Length: 499
Image (cartoon, rainbow, N blue to C red; front, side, top):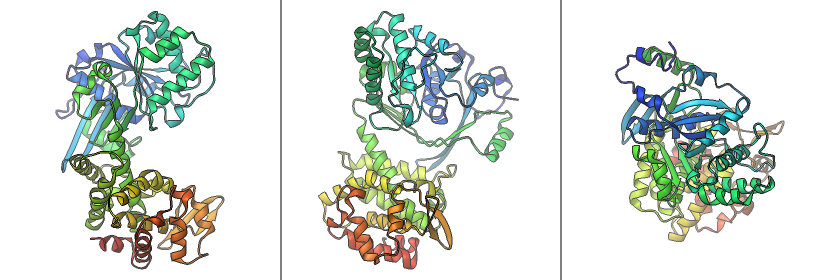
């Protein structure tokens, strides 16, 4: 039995959260570009939860923009899918299975573009959400008269022009547009592209004025781990317990955050935010970006080389080790939190640290350390160096855990071999990939100079870091010492010495 509207009445699982019949009669209020798991696991989850509480009372029309794949799974299941929320919150294990009914239908842009434009004529339709990957928010100078236009911005502009015409440019017909692509100031960037594209298409000045002034383009930040399609074992186990087949089965962690930059007008339209504290609408969301970038991403980046060199495969496996978990906690709470280059309180960093450590311990998320090492150098520069510099503005003490993280980075980046432009390090007689734009730099210098000279060369490389890190008092010496311990006694021993 497959999950569908008709089969809901046959599903008898007391702990399964299912929609009531009234939800399927709710009007379509959201146009969503993208069918991916992140959208199903976060924005669509919030809207579904609000609908079940009788708050938002609206459903989603999903636009399938790419030519790859099919929407048949959504069609077969009447837009329904099961979201399995699994993880740890406040130290407690959480497991919740929800049949989400936020999606009304999925329409292919390539096959039925007029049907999508028809949505612009509905006054109930007030919101646009997108997740087209970072590549999706780019300017492609093209006509928006194509059927359909190629790029996401062109599709959106064509839709908005259709809406402008349908309602004679009334201010009330403006939309709240929320891109969730993982780029800074995504709403501002999307608006700039649409204005350039409108000029390229020589659109009327009245429309451009309406586009600028009657529509709200909201910067947003999303944060929830929603892995891709579950493995066969997970699917089989679920079907056996649930008693039905779900080809759209989606698994997510418990933690969820959708921070949206907006005013009271935006807040009134996005009433689904009232249903879950994970949705935050505020005039400035930079604090949430900083907390995530520094404490979660920064800790991951400073830990990945150490964890991998200590023979841990996944984040959960490393967190089960008291030495590593102690290191990660000290690094995050004592060094990173105190030096975030943004005004933030200790209460806020303590709460966020607790959430991050819960997420790291999630037994249902198999986050591979080797995957986190991809573009190691760039991540250190963007996520960690600003924290390191700010730390030294506040004290002359060496941040011991950050220094150890840099030592592990240099050890991990010790490229031994190159094959067809791909670079590899070596650990315990086995090779591992070094997927980093700076891999060739490290390979070119391998074994050419002494350890101390090489570490000095790396830390003083302003092209790598944007600054000379050897000018920070005591930092270079600490990195050299930690590097020697890692190479002689191992990464786990080096972490233990920090206690």
